Length: 232
Image (cartoon, rainbow, N blue to C red; front, side):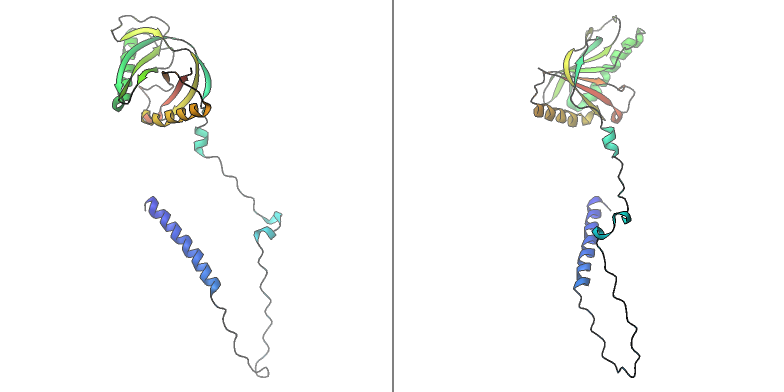
């Protein structure tokens, strides 16, 4: 039974109880039995009147069962991340790869950039000193340009034309947290836009994603991404 059928069945059952109860309440009372000869029939045993039905409000407090307090929903625990927290970005030395992507293949393109940077680091025996980042430098309806960055503590050699050394963004920003797949980032960015509108804040033309979970090893629906929005 699908969700709509289940809902309709519940409504129908509720209606039967309500209207059935009303019909019983409106049924005429049974007629009294015909009188009999007292001398021929013994007097009936008196029947005590029915006990008075009390409303819940009339029941003493001590007799009332305590109302159980339901535990907080799991979603409220999972969604306890701060949203719109003030944050200061510190500049880091990074290995940078420039790229462009269309929205239909956005995540795959970003993953390819991270793979290229990681392969270059592995070849030279250099370990990352921080989380991978994406800096969006421009966007439009069809796609975007970006910088894929991995923090390092030394210069990397044998760079290609698309890869260089640089520094990550710095300055004041607001921090937001996204959990889940990259495809659902639209919901997070919509919430960010609403937050900025409510606070009457104006963002710069760039924003940064820091991948707290390794995007090369983490299932896409398990991603945790910090989004930093620099303010004007």
